[in-house]
Amino acid sequence: MNPALQGLLTIIIGVGGCIAYYFFSNQFLDKVLYPPSGPNAGRNINRANMIRPWLFLFPALFVLGLYLAYPVFETFRLSLTQRGAGFVGFDNYARMFGEPKFREAMQNNMLWLVVVPAFSTGFGLLAAQLTDRIGWGNIAKSLIFMPMAISFVGAAVIWKLVYDVRPVDQEQIGILNAILLGLGWDQPVTFLTVPFWNNFFLMIVLVWIQTGFAMVILSAALRGIPEETIEAAIIDGANPFQIFFKIKVPQIMGTIVVVWTTITIVVLKVFDIVFAMTNGQWKTQVLANYMYDKLFRANDWGVGSAAAMIIMLLVTPILVWNVYSARKEMR
Image (cartoon, rainbow, N blue to C red; front, side):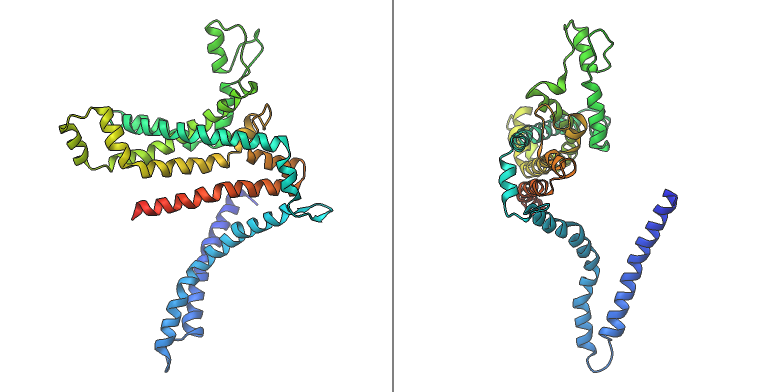
């Protein structure tokens, strides 16, 4: 089937199905189950009004259960089994924690957690403050936010070309090596294979992407600061640095924390960048890529599912706390 026709049919069936569901479910509720007539009309109307919200919520609850709750329980079940051996309890977890690659992935993820949220939030806050003080700030914001429109794989391909290395006797197409050799460097640098530092070269990609997100959120927060507090600080003789760090930052600290934790969740799930640039080689393995290797390369569904559960356990507390903080900010 033609993709355009397939998409059109999907829209028609999806939207039409939702309209039909809401219409006929309400008709069944009002006409058949609890008709608003007869001696029990008042009670029927009240009962119908109690059930009606659940009719509207049912499609969302069904989809969440099918695509979120069920996969979680099924993944947990698979993490306790092995192919051909059946139920093995927590043996997969013990085997996973004993693997050097898993420990490497955990260490790298912790390093990502320290570096990426800090630099993304810091650069985003700096960009938000500076772009609001210049005439062409909106253009600057658009340029900084632009990487957010690029997929992680697309960004990884762009930066892989930036880090590209060719033999010294060939022309360098990687901009970093071209600059280094132009400045008199003896040999081109294979950035993605340099131990330890190659992790930071990968982190730059995610920082480049997430800085625009942090900037937009924090710029809105900065504009929401009451002008009276800033004017009072100016009258008291505060300089621009004191106004920023002692007046503005404390008032948007809640937003900064929400941005920080949101980027932290992205970091815990990072996969595309590592997969596209190094595939976890040269000691750049992360949890999501380790899970992919176990599930789809080694066909070890037990350990792969155990890795998925570890990622979920790391993400869930941060996600819950983030939602709680966001709701608290909205009150």
